[in-house]
Image 1 (tube, rainbow, N blue to C red):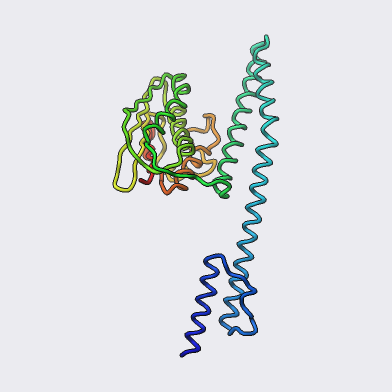
Image 2: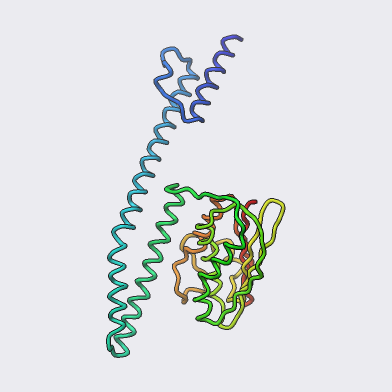
Length: 277
């Protein structure tokens, strides 16, 4: 009985070291271990090596993301600059259309690369979000100010009645998440329509809802809209890369929140961002 107790204590110590990341193979002499303890030793040693390999791969991915960001920044900036200079020339209609297309595709590529970089950094833990207690009113106002030029181009009115509501979130990245949702609302809403923003406090979460009168999303597609690169059947003709909602969900999820979506074809959509208090 005493031997069994000692064995359990040693196994418990090995497992505790493995959980805490303090396990060292050198701390255990295999010649003095029982058969069961030896199996634990091999398993924990293998787990530690796997963890080290994952960390090495993560470091390689971080370096790759950094290289992509650095190597593509200057060429894309030059393409956009030359396209802009071209547009200022006295061109015939056909040439002007081609230059406009080059610029639009370059901007689309720049947006895609930056979105992928941000997503990779979130997924690999390259940087950590820093949630703190903030008023969602200032978050919403900043996002509305950012989206207003696009909304005005389509004569879309954004309606928000300022209201104080506290939650815990990273201001910079949560604003990006909200902007992506507002950007979709503007993009897929008809001209001269309205987008409504509201806030509501619950017991454990505070909620931002964004309602539009856009083209809507079919019921069978709703579970898939937050997938990476997913684009609905009725938006294929529209410009976009299908990563904005994915990035929005990742940002909110990393902060302990979640996003819900409700929609009906031709009747608009409602996106709700829930942030923990």
